[in-house]
Amino acid sequence: MTYTNTAYKAPVSLKVNKDTEKVNLIFRGQGVILFTATENCSLTFCDVSGNPGMKVKFTEQGISVNLEPSNEPLVTDNSKGLVNQKGAYYWFSLDAQNQRLYAGIGEARKETAVYSYQFPAEQNKKLFLESLVSVSAEHLHITRILRDPITRSIPLLVKNTEELTMDSLASGMYLPKANLSLTSQQLYDCISGKQFILNTPDFPEFTQAIEHSIATPGKWCYEVLKQKSTEFNKDKPNEKETYLRITLGENNGESPGIPYVMEIWPVGHYSPIHNHGNADAVIRVLNGAINVSLFPFLSGDAVEPFAKADFKKEDITWISPELNQVHQLKNLDTNKDTCITIQCYMYENNDKRHYDYFDYLDESGVKQQFEPNSDMDFVEFKKTIKKEWEEFQGEKPKEVIPQRKPWYPPYWC
Ligand SMILES: [Fe+2]
Image (cartoon, rainbow, N blue to C red; front, side):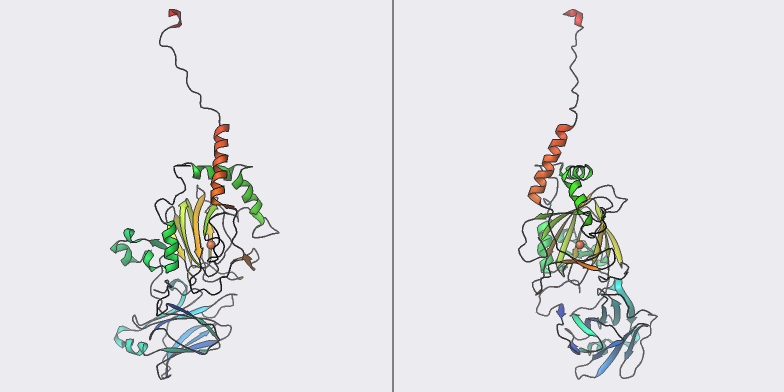
């Protein structure tokens, strides 16, 4: 499962730092090669003696694969290959177990595949594919090798052990929490508990009070959202492209910004398209619902999302350095409630860079850096909203308490 990234002895993902023409697969006959390219290029898979067994060519016209040395083509109806969009990268997946090949653009996953080939069962190419142990590159730059091949679509919803049924595991609808990276499992454990809720006994109307603060001029949420209208575009205020970031705790140097952020999304509000500094993240919806568009890569050029998903209250989704990394969030206009999420971020242990920014695309499609900031600390925020709510309750006209009428007629007195 390529969507996990834990530091096992045989790593599930290897970063290729130097410009190299040949790399070994982590396991024979399987894996994904990720690379960048700006001109026609090829990958040649070789056996242990260095003899070529399969050649993959990427051109603007498409992707073609030939067996070597016979030059026999593996024909499919693919017609998409190299693209001109800024930020594009590519991947090729070799899968001896299922005797299947995939290739695609952007995040390595089935949803971005533009080439697929299934060897006919009668050919039985398993042994041949397992003999391939290395790959040579021509006119491209290999950036990463994944241990496991691409197989099925990756679930976006995470479920913990006690929620998983045999049916849900078989259908592939949910990602078991145990399949998250160890870093994400840690984040998941911190925010998935039953007590991790907004309306607590000390302030049971917290959600209602936040809605009131958003809707009322002069109140904290309303005013801060207004001030933030130029956050992502200094020259063109856009109140819809705003959300509030309420942080929990401190930045301990292990995450882009403070690791725990409660984000508040009024109806119709959205984020720019952005990535997450190659960090792991777990997101839980605490109130309302959020729509997430996922993109194959961050580009200044127009790139369509490969998936859109709605997450409702209690849903938990995830981000890894390799997957779900580029997205745009929106509380749809058709929703009724403010969406409140808890987002937590942390770098993987093997992240040597700690890139402290989320890159985003401005209105003109130019990549900009967003430094994950805080609009207010959670403790202070809760106090502020509580005070506003109590003031509001005090301003409301007192309920008229009906006077008890005497049961006897006045003339009896
Ligand atoms: Fe995000």
